[in-house]
Amino acid sequence: MILVACLSIYSILILGSMATMSIGIGVIVLGYLAAMGGPIPWFRAMREELQRPQVRTYFYWTVALTLACLVSLLGAKFFPLEYGGKGPEVHLAKDMAKAWYFFWPLFLLPGLRRLHLAERRTILKVWLIAFTLLSILGIFQFFNGWPRPQPIPERPNFFHATLFLGHHLSVASIFIFPFFAVLDAWRNRVFSRKWLTLAALVGALCLLATVSRALWLALPASLFVYVIFALPRKWAAALVTLAGASAFGLYQIENVRSRIRSGEGIHERYALWNANWEFFKARPITGAGWHHNLELSGYYLEIFGKKGVPIFSGHAHNNLIEVAASLGIIGVISWIGWNLFVVWIAWKNWRNQKTWFALGLVCAWIAFQVNGLTQVNFWESKVIHSMMWVVAWSLLWMTEKPALDGASRKEPIA
View 1: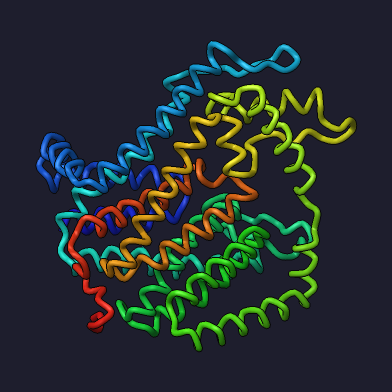
View 2: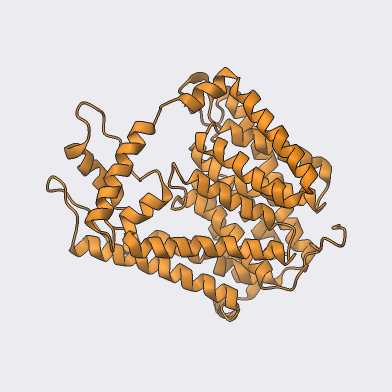
C-alpha cells in the first residue's frame, strides 16, 4: 500500500512544477525505504534488477552517456574553448549533478516489480486522471492566462498552455507521454472509455494550446504512425484522410496560420545552430563541455554575431546539435545508442504483447524527438522526470512474461 501511495503521488507531481518534482523524489525515497525496510534491501533489489539482461543493457548505455558527459567536462576544464578571452567555468561535481536522473529508473524498478497488476493499474490510472485534469486547466489557461500568463506574440489576448511547468515547450514534451497512454488505454479497453475519450480530447486540445510549432508537426506525425500500426488498414486510411482534411481546415484559421508563418525565434535558432556547429568543429571528440556551450554561445555571438541584433544565447535548440556541440562524437554515439535502446524496448513490448502501453509509447518517443528538432528537451530536468518514469515502466514490462498485465490481443482487457 505504501508503494502504491508514493508512486501515485509521484505520478501526479511529475506533471507539476520543478518544485513538486523534487518533492516527488523525496516521497519516493521515503516510501521505498519504509516499504523495503531500509536502504540495504533497496540496493540489494536494484542489484538483482541488474541481473536482467535488458536492465543491464540500459545501465551500460546510461553509464556510456554519463562518461561522455564527464569526458567532455574534463576536456573543457583542461582544453577550454575561448572567445574574446572568455571560456567556460567548469565545476565537475556541480556540472555532473544532473547525470543521476538517468539512473532513476533503476531506483524505481524494485518498487514497481513488487506490485500486483491491480496496483500497477491504479498508479497509471492516477497518472492519467491527473493528466486529464491538468489538460482541462491548460485549455482554460489558453484563454485567460491563469495560473502563469505567457502571451502568444502573434495573439497577445491568448496565452500559451504552460500550466505549472513555466514554459509551453515543457508541456509539449511532457504531456505527449500520458496522451499516448490514454490512446493505448482506450484502444485496449484498460479503463472506462467514457473518461478516456474525454482525456484524449482535452489532452489533444491542451497540447495544441501550447502553441508549439514543433508539436504541431510532431503530434500529427506520431499520430499517423499510431493509426497505421494500431488500426485495420481501411480505418487507418480513413483516419489519415480525415487528419489531412482537418490539418488543411485548421490552416485556414488565421490564428493558426499566422503562428506557423511566424518567423519568431527562427533567425535566433539559426545563429545558435551555427555557433554550436563551430564548437563541434573546434572540439569534435569531446565537445565544448556538457552544458558549457550555453555560456560559450554568448561569447561567440558577441564576436561573430550579426551587429546591432540582440544576442540570443543558451542551449542549441536542437537535441542532436546540442549533444554534438557539448559532448562531441563520443557523446553523439552514446546519446543515439541510449535513445535507440529505449525506443527498441517499447517496440519489443508492443510486438511481444507485453503491455497495453507500448505502441503509444513508441509514438510518444517519436513526438518527443520531433519536438527536439527545435528545442533541447532531452536535458531539461522537468522533462527528464517523465522520460525516466516511462523508461522504468518499459524496463519492467520488458523483463516480465508476455501479457502479464492482461495486454493480450486475443483476450479482452478488464
